[in-house]
Image (cartoon, rainbow, N blue to C red; front, top):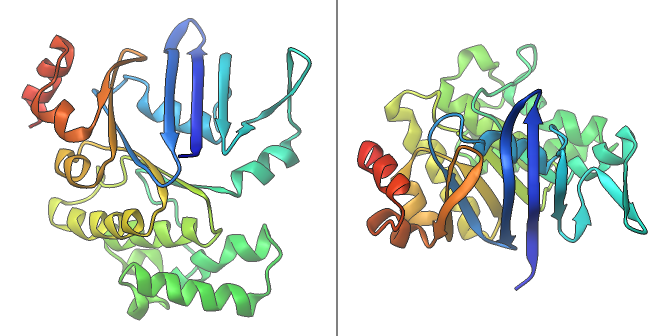
Length: 253
């Protein structure tokens, strides 16, 4: 099976604070990879390193066989230009905890914007795909609504459609349901479940252990910037091997 994401000894610090301390992991193409752990364990930072929103201090991160943010010449790494990083980022969709929709644009315009502006697609092509994507996330009837006219769960589903509009090969989800009212969580998770069934490679930072157990192919428990334990979600969640994992899961399950 081909590898979509590979992290080799990835370190990241903010000032004197070491947030990632040598992360090694692989995500296979088509896999749903769940990252769990307490706040401040480095999960979101790691996600942001994958699309070079944060630069790693040491180690290597590659997506689909290509180094992220750097190119290698001999045994040296050279940082890519902003335009080259932007080109890499096009192929990686990211959905944040906060929806970050453009408030002055309708749901449809939000989903159309990046393909037109970034890829230079015609408005007609972008509109056709945007309509299909809004249908796919169950919001075909909300195309003309502005973000303020949508619930949090609906805004998050528009954000997912917007990320998919760029036809990414990898989707990153940073706690996509944690800002939502509990009754709205299910709709967003259903959309993500559908993506998983379609074979989308996904890395999901989540507190939704039920989703991780049902939909995840792999689960990694992180704490204090290191991978403490990893394995199949059911194995890790029902039979954790490490005391730190046991302690965390006893509080969240």
